[in-house]
Amino acid sequence: MLTLIAMFSLISLPYAPNALEPVISQQTIEFHYGKHLQTYVDNLNKLVPGTEYEAMALEDIVRRSQGAVFNNAGQILNHNLYFTQFSPLDAANHTPRGAILEAINRDFGSFENFMQEFEQKGITLFGSGWVWLSADKDGKLIITQETNAGNPLTKGLKPLLTMDVWEHAYYLDFQNRRAAHLHALWQIINWDEINRRYTGK
Image (cartoon, rainbow, N blue to C red; front, side, top):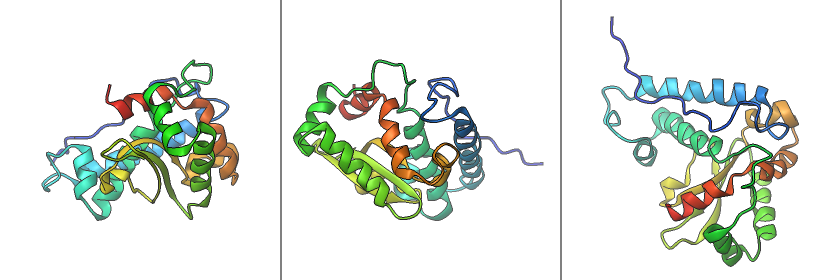
């Protein structure tokens, strides 16, 4: 009997499952992280053996693949970036500072303008997908809407921050109130992590 060797595994959360409450409940974490993300990991581990993607890093698979491989690899990468960008509500890193704040003020006029534009892109994205803050090769910040498993990597951008607008990300906590969910997420964004992604330091 052939035994599959898992090449990809579920990331470890940098916080307890209940640490993001009340913005994201433990129940949502258990379903979204524990079941949805685990399914994408399991699916990719079944799809890539014996293919050209077998020895590739996850980011390279996302850049080069299509179809089922892309959908599952993209969702793993998206969720990895999503879940590791948060910190508990009582943490001290929920205000942007340093290089990322300077870039936000430069490219959007103010942090408030940026938040409004970001939320609006999330609210108006039809169906399932993601809204992203990314940087281009010159460090300019760009907000994009990506449907389904889309990731800005495929456009040559560096993904920095994302909000998941698939309903399973918020329905248990906010029902159909996507706008309220997006607005609440700012309370748990770990801006030190976003700054690290931006600067590479």
